[in-house]
Figure 1 (cartoon, rainbow, N blue to C red):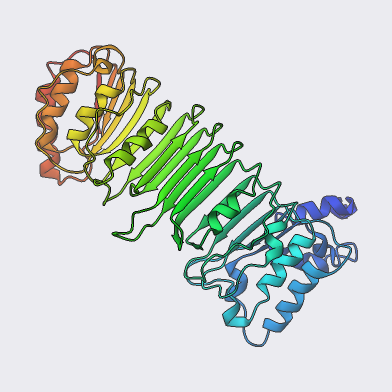
Figure 2: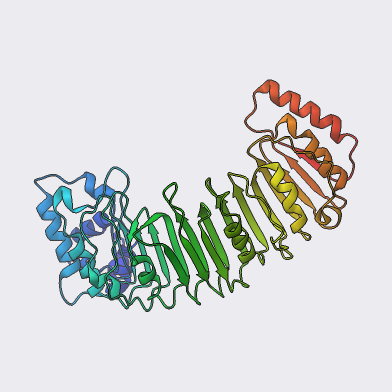
Length: 420
């Protein structure tokens, strides 16, 4: 029985689109199907090299691989590229040292073909990225991971006028490179600096009207926190900050902000004013996740979070007690206490407990938290559901905790109570 080969009869551009979903090595193998497929892989719009290829390379076949990549990227009269990606991991990376790969040449070739997305994993990369990359007008998304690599330097001329997503991970940005880079991305919507650091500069200045999502995770050396972070983003919807509080922190014009994820690490207690400025900048959020590793005193200048309805808190119970008074309309509360502080819960009742709070979830419950549970049950007048998770306990501890809670909860008929 003869089966019709319908795929081979499709137009070239459709078959190229199909090949773009395959690993590059599989796309190449389609050349043996028939003459219609021969060398069709050279016209695919997505070029994705993963670490599987690296593992298969030897001194004998590396030159053939280089010629193949040159043919794939650098030959004239080829279609524009949707995506050029070099995948890697902590064990294998496309650095120029092992096999003398022309990574900079590959990047330039992708740029010359009007690439829209570039994703590079370049651990131990020992060269400067080509200047041509930073003037690519077709580029919409740039992702760079450069752990253990040479410091990240941006040339004096930068113009990424159509870039919408920029993600830089594990990189050291030298001098004014960071500010020069982002100030020349005029339509940027999504900006991420993950586990990065800055050398020979004292200010991080982010003023982008088009920005909608911002994630900042900077490493600042201990004792060297005299940095200033300035953010002006009127259309920002999501903000994530994972670092210490530095000497200067200015967040302005962030009235569109809906969700914030803030993790404040150690060495922040000396900058109470900057912490206050941070909270003032995010006070319009509806959803807040807050992780505080050290105590930061709540000054009288902290704003009221009128719009806050969802609050997830990881930290000291004493800090939570104070903060609830600044969230009068809170409806959902999730907590995980990191330290036992002996906080007294016979305090004034925040208005959110009396009027609005409907759901509470407590993770990693320990027996000392019984006063917390009692306080919340007694004072949450409209509570509908209480979830208590007794994770990370021995069987004996878990039984004791469950019995302790059951004795307390039998007297409460206000809400649904779930013990997990």
